[in-house]
Length: 62
Image (cartoon, rainbow, N blue to C red; front, side):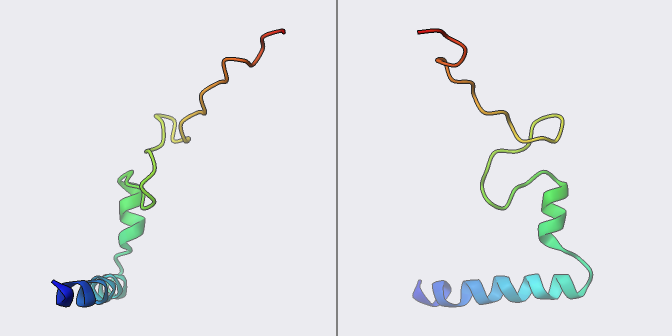
């Protein structure tokens, strides 16, 4: 298990470098498919990020 943990990142990085040398930019392809690398929510239908929910206190008078 520790061997996999030690070699895994090097193998993945090497694969990404080889793909980039062949002209394939994996992060760019994933972004075009709508997959975000930061684990966030996907953009809305217009391509914009989802709107922030409005505060229930906004617009009320005290």
